[in-house]
Image (tube, rainbow, N blue to C red; front, side):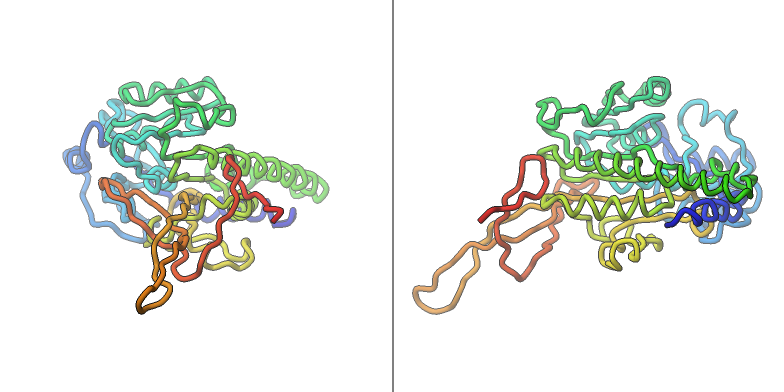
Length: 386
């Protein structure tokens, strides 16, 4: 995206979406159920209606379940819940739909060890805790002390969450404390260009050509700095020896922070691949932009994007990395007496399914003989001299 397009895209997002994003509430399943929350609102005069695709004009005082996320409810956009008893008690959390997708895609199994690398103010951390039903262990890192205090307030009754004031990048992946970490959630600093209410200032932006050019140049430079940091944090997550699943998300509409980052990190590892589309919300219609990753439709299909004006939620991007391992299997080379067997390498992806102790195994290379590759301890590719 060139400089002249940056502000035009953001203006369009604001103009199209500001008035149509409904009020989403995530039900805190550690404390209540979605049925009880619906009953609470029905007692207040709300009508329970069936899920719908078009959320442009929701009737007043209606409540409905979301089509994609099982713990999410939808109310009209002008619904004020800050004084509602369920909000004050923590039974419901005001959280945009797109913000709920990363934890849902992650879906750690019970008793897992999880790192939330950029956790504050804590909505995703509390969502992870609810999915795990307050079992296992979650380490929640953030550099902003005041925002971390908000997280501590939100998760004060989640006994299996440890909030840490510090940088995830300073964590030693080989520290025995994190030796059983199987899931990492990455939601690093980004431009915030997908968050509609952060972009209102652009509507009144100056039309002065020189000022616009200066702002565009500065913003493009900021995008480059952000994308470098985002790449760095993913590569650091790759170094944890037992991690099986890494979720990367941004609230950005820019390919520089999304598809471009994914392409660069995949070029630097032989240990991780993107999860198959069937494992990450297969019914979700909006996927990655193939033109931003060398017209690779296969890779784009494994990514998730949300569009404010089409999905009635803030703009988000989500990618799910899963560890690729090499499994030795026996295959016969020929038939007849004295036939010999040889071992072949197959690259497989292992993904643990929510609420299931078994592994789903997807074979990525089913036919060809895969040669052994030399891998550095940090998960990056290593060029062999031989």
